[in-house]
Length: 380
Ligand SMILES: Cc1cc2nc3c(=O)[nH]c(=O)nc-3n(C[C@H](O)[C@H](O)[C@H](O)COP(=O)(O)OP(=O)(O)OC[C@H]3O[C@@H](n4cnc5c(N)ncnc54)[C@H](O)[C@@H]3O)c2cc1C
Image (cartoon, rainbow, N blue to C red; front, side, top):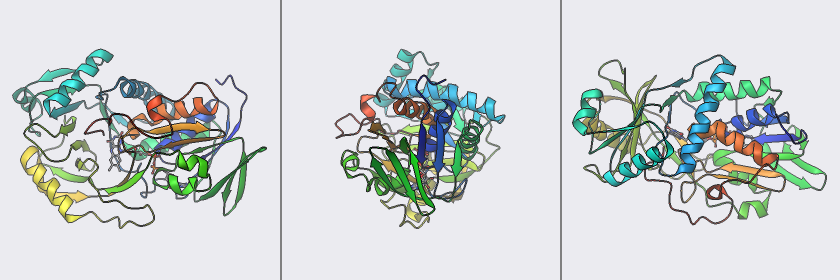
């Protein structure tokens, strides 16, 4: 597949992004070793759990095209792996009329199937939800099973020849004229190039590369806490949903979807700042209370008293746009700001292109100071 000679590449981080990069790099014939500090399916980063929203509704064509490409690659991965982990449930955006209209325009321009409904029409179709103003429905969106998708990325990377070393923590990266070394307690790995896909640990690993570290936009890690509510009836036919504040509802952006563990609901990016080493994994009762109030008002299809919350890390850039860029032999992929999962295989492809020097990263994703318009209020 590759027109460049095969290289040796170390990928640091086995979350969705590092695993996708390993798959795409190995599929191009590169010799890949992925190091992950924890075990398979761990719950300490951002990529675990049973559900992530996959949707096309973004205000910018860049993200819509990335989602389109990712959708094709997720389907290819399902075929290669022999397991379905994507459910086409459709997705709805409602709330702030200007935000919803802008999304409708973007979908129209990109040729993505969609329709606009009144709240009454939408409530007839999805009685588990109450709607706030015009409703944008895009039927090809849906839900990814996060744990299964990451396992499939890793398995397919291995089938393509990648080596995955779990329980191996990279302690630093050293660049020299003869190549790069990834340091770890069990010895160093000498390679041609390194991909840093370390999520909330990115700044720690880049400490050993001060010049690169200085060009990284400020990354903020927060502990977020979605909750699963018991549906009043079997949750058949729920779309995933995004409630953009600014209509009747004025709280933080809320997202949700019917997941295998119940109807998942979360506020976008309201969690406390933490470091991955110092966090308590304990959902904050006030936050759970806010989600219960939200469910009481906007989700007639769930029992607001039957709720189970969980925690997960966001690592966010100031504008919500990702960091995917290369300096010398190091490619950094970080700052996925609570909305990166859906794009993972397309980002893996982008990373493989950067490693092979086939084109540059989109301007919005480059290292350096951030001056762009934020991606959108509710970004999931
Ligand atoms: C609650 C929640 C809901 C979300 N919902 C959605 C959604 O609906 N749709 C969507 O598209 N996105 C969603 N996201 C965002 C998405 O899940 C993340 O953007 C994505 O998972 C980020 O993946 P990552 O690989 O960058 O980070 P991570 O999954 O954190 O992976 C980084 C990995 O690097 C490893 N690592 C770090 N340092 C080292 C080291 N020194 N040596 C070895 N290994 C190391 C870590 O152990 C970790 O496994 C959500 C996120 C959260 C938290």
